[in-house]
Amino acid sequence: MFHPHHNLSDEVNRNIVQSEIEGGLDLRHLARPALVEVSTQNTRYRLVMEGDNEAWIEGHPQFCPEPVLVEIAGSNWGGSMIKAHYLGRGMHMEFRHPQFPGVIVTSAIVDIRVLSEAA
Image (cartoon, rainbow, N blue to C red; front, side, top):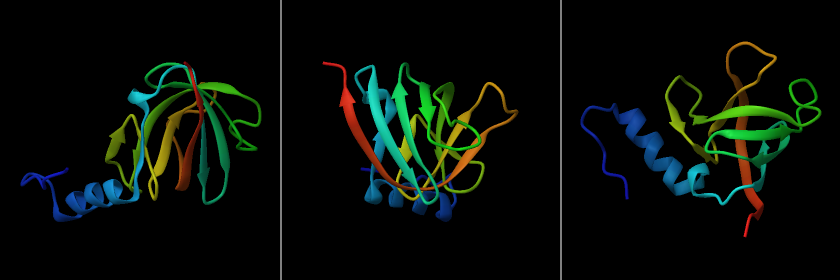
């Protein structure tokens, strides 16, 4: 259970608590490889998690119509503060694409489903 930290703003503490209420997926706890479906407000992504932050991703018509290996940073609340290695409902997934500069930030995550994990 999260305890508010005095060095963080009330807004940040609220966001952290809200992410625990809405739920999400800590990518570090998945057996590899793992197939994960992430539905955002605009797109449905399929990720094959290979390492702590490496995944084959597909689903977006511009950035990943075909599977491409990316670095999943985690998710944020629409600002610059990221929750690393974590995908949370109501948050925005961040990933780095080898062919696009900077970070790609998705629309808000609506649902996350683990479809399969290695035995």
